[in-house]
Image 1 (tube, rainbow, N blue to C red):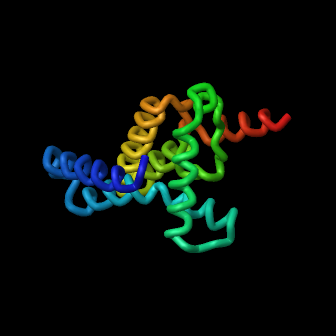
Image 2 (image 1 turned 90 degrees about the vertical axis):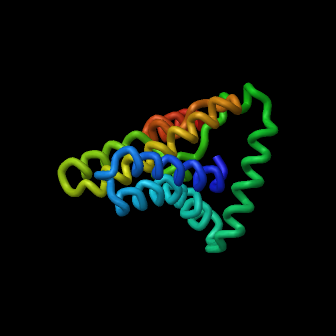
Length: 152
């Protein structure tokens, strides 16, 4: 999903939670909103790692072009495409589980991050279903193993 949609929907989601659950507080609202958008920093980090270029604009343009190419693929190609798991470092159930555990045992702020990340991933999965892609971003380990098996 494009960042502008994550911004708008993340803000609305955080606002609704803040209105209906006032115990979340302004800090909770801000953390949920920020984490629902900033989870995508892993895309930028992957771009920098791969290309050694630190330009946010170039990274955004590169991923936007990749997205256009992916959307143009056939339904069969979309269903079999396996993304690079490194690109989605924060987009998996494993990271959600770690953040949830940190929220329970370390600090409740991690629970707000968990909520923001979960909402972001939910939106990504809805978009993947809508465009006919294989549902990814569910498990980093599963995608990593599948990617390795694809090479052999």
